[in-house]
Amino acid sequence: DPRLLWFHGDGVCLAIDVAADERASRLFGQLDQMALEHGALVNLSKDSRLDAATTRRLYPGYDEFRQRLHDYDPQRRFDSMLRRRIGV
Image 1 (cartoon, one colour):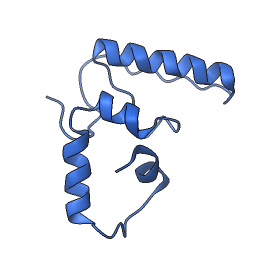
Image 2 (cartoon, helix red, strand yellow):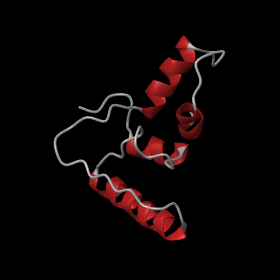
Image 3 (spheres, one colour):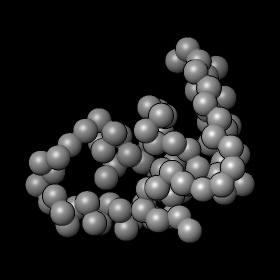
Image 4 (cartoon, rainbow, N blue to C red):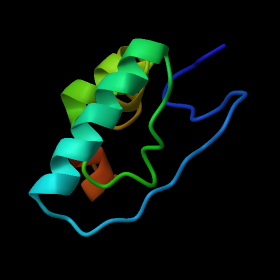
């Protein structure tokens, strides 16, 4: 039962470390598409290149999380690179 931005569920978690270059960008773009097609999740705390649009598509609870965080912190006093990158 996916909620908010929880990286939780049954299955396998695959971690791949590669040099950040154009080939890696294409590879991870393809992996993102596969994740979307198969209902998989990408770990937000491990993937430093995932953007807001892809996060919104991957996580059904994205909009609820974003709204709840805004309600709790409307002045954005608690900020991070992750928060800015995924648009919450």
